[in-house]
Image 1 (cartoon, rainbow, N blue to C red):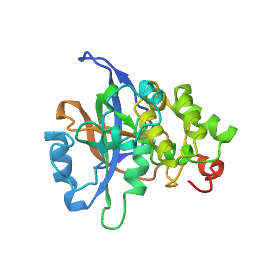
Image 2: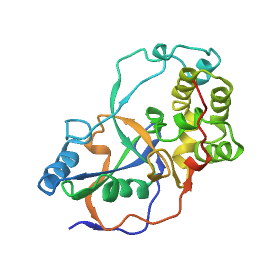
Image 3: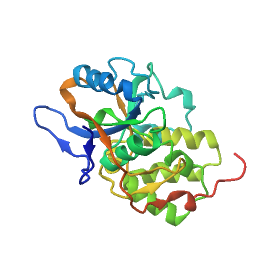
Image 4: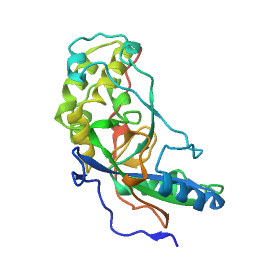
Length: 250
């Protein structure tokens, strides 16, 4: 039986049984009904990322130096930041409601009508922020106090050196490179993990956090994987796009 949606739970940090901080993440997917049990079994028995389950997955890259140190060396050609092969990864969030929205609405359609909510743990130091839906767009926008204030709420004060540097340059590629650094900053990551502001960005999806988490994630760190049904939580979200006016030219 699918889970009946109840009270939302947020991501949390735990150090039980580990020498590193393990953070709780959520992931929402949808599959065809005939694939529901095989996918659930694969996740429970073998973890995430051990085998291909047919879902598009991102790559995670590592920086050659700490992001703050690299920021002081700008300008840096973007291609010089990656010094090793990309690492297979999955998208995830620290917010259960965000994952439920993906499972029950964004990823669900007539063909993929079975929704799955997955919760797992991973070291917070290993992840990076997924900046595609807000950070990269905001870095190329006209600087505005209200946008700056929202970004600080969502990503923390640690974002400001990167944001100010991005807004200070007219070079679009350098702005992208600067955000490539910001998404790896440990303080930015932790602030974003703790964010409770619900917002909409480029894709129109309401969410509180988005991360890229390296795989494989062993089955010992899978907290649960189960079918869910119902409607995602309805809550007013801050529309970040209303604050974004793109620059003309580069």
